[in-house]
Length: 188
Image (cartoon, rainbow, N blue to C red):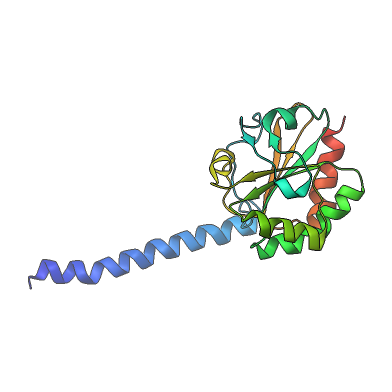
């Protein structure tokens, strides 16, 4: 083994450790200054119209399917919620969705890569917070929306423009700190 190869074998792990340390230091500085949000997941769709799509209904739910035209036709802010019966965080957020439905907020559901029977059982057992419900069996619509995973929720304004995105379960804090303020802002 040559001296150059030995140096490379020693230097490579040190370089990786140095880069990792620099990244960690940058993250800590961002946390300290408030410029880094560890829960923030960027979305290229904020401020843009809802992507075009048409999804079939979950037949047993009794709710109509969902399309971009349906979302644009509400004339008021709505939430679009990607969810699945196999998603544990979806169970956590479900009571908040039911509360917002009871308060009169239209919630449009997109069931993501789920078995129809499992999705129906989830809604039968827990109640349905949805005004409309489409099935995204293949996940193609989720790709167009930039969905990272479920649950994921979007606020759409009265003009069909995506104004906010939340990756993860909707908690009572998210409702009170984020959604309530957004509804006041975009319900004009």
